[in-house]
Image 1 (cartoon, rainbow, N blue to C red):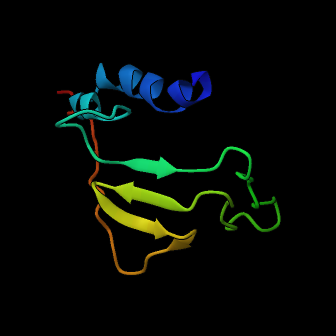
Image 2 (cartoon, rainbow, N blue to C red):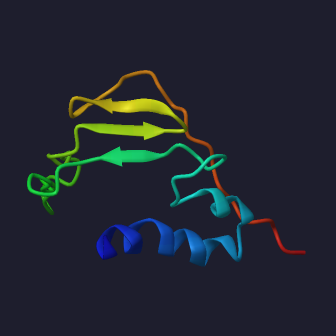
Image 3 (cartoon, rainbow, N blue to C red):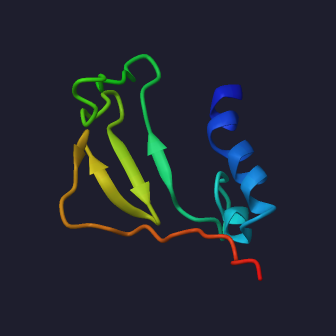
Length: 92
């Protein structure tokens, strides 16, 4: 669980100080953004290399962004783009 917290909640907490939109990131609760990655920790492996950096990882069967499936059965779902930018306000 520590690794998951370091990859999700902790970065969101750090960024929310500058960009309030991150208060709805890195958490599973009512009202939070529905960005969820379902993975098998025993099978997750990065396939990208220096020579071939665009290789997809394995062991991640489902990814939901804003509640919309963008990876189904380990394959990218074509034509969906449910994400929204989370930006900090521009300082004057």
